[in-house]
Image (cartoon, rainbow, N blue to C red):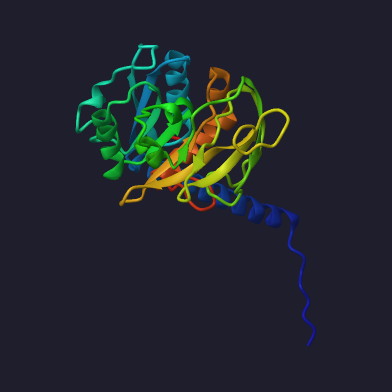
Length: 282
């Protein structure tokens, strides 16, 4: 027996394709709506951004960071800012034992190199030892230097000085980490390269920066971005020494890196480098 298949009329085939296209369009629309609903159902993380002190345009940078980070993650950034431009800016949280209560993460972006009161430093660190994750930017690495190293124990890296303001050539050390996965290295504008006095064994370097000629690992080829787990609770801490100038802080590549570091510290970044569902851009 011979089977003969009659050709499908063009009009019928077009009708089938149109219905199929309409179905897939409807399905895509439904998936988009469900994803948006899931995003709205997740409560934004509450983040405290601390800025102020010596040597930087904190009045401008605090707003760049708030706008840029809120655009990249489902977070609400509250600002604690001091207009004090000395090396001893004062903040209410210095003496408040519950200063981080209600926040999911704290960003330290203050420059407080001459605040050396151990009681203040211990009060700040207690919140992180108790489990509040943190992000540290630029001059936060040179703050709270009591001489006993408590702040460096928290950071996972000790730095004491920086180089001149010239471009820094960045190189990814670990491109498999969620924070750096898929990230392209770049060369900054004029920036300060912080030295590495000590890199703790518990720190995990992510990006190195080279400034000028030579290859001295203590001066012109140093770790500029890393992660750390602090204290008995292994609180996640992300840090980068980059970010002196406002143009760098406003750079999309910088804001992308900091937002990923923030999400990682809060446990909201997947292994592939994308935010956990509900914690991406609003």
